[in-house]
Amino acid sequence: MATMNSNDENDMREVIHLESLAQRRHVATTRWGMLLVTMMRLVAVLWFLLGLLYWARILAPGEVPLDALPSDAAVVIVFFAVAHLSAAVGLWLAAPWGGVLWLLAAVGELAASWFMPAYIKGGIFVWLTYISLIGVYVAFTWMAAQEREQY
Image 1 (cartoon, rainbow, N blue to C red):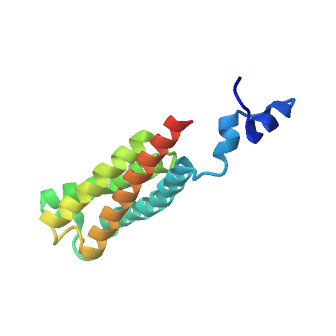
Image 2: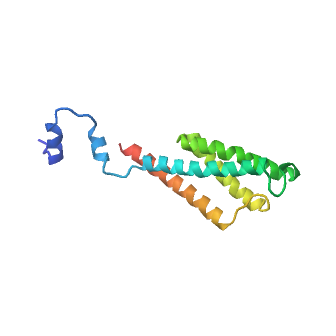
Image 3: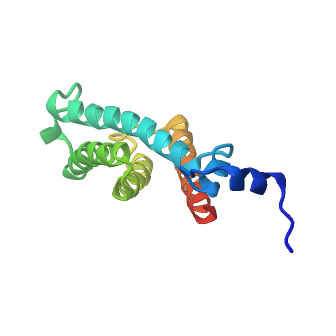
């Protein structure tokens, strides 16, 4: 005969179970899925602002108008203007395609700042920020997936 511990005895005394035992025990642990969604929404706000800065470069150029730039630089600026706003929407919705688009845009912007530093401003602060955000996103995604497998 199996012995019962105090948690099992308390669970058996309840008449109405509104949630599963796993959900009740899960309350005290870290909710990685919620942290991932919060992080995605914070990054969405940042990426929305970056997208607006790229659109400001297109619509209200300060130094050089878009049509006076070399064609490769103009294409990259327009790409990031569209990609950043699209990624921001996807991140805000916590959609899987938003995370993928954001990763592509972030890595693409790092590459562009490396290969075209005159047109895409980068620097060590931007590199560290993007790499840190990507690392946190990957870690939270992995932990949220582990959390789903446990429960």
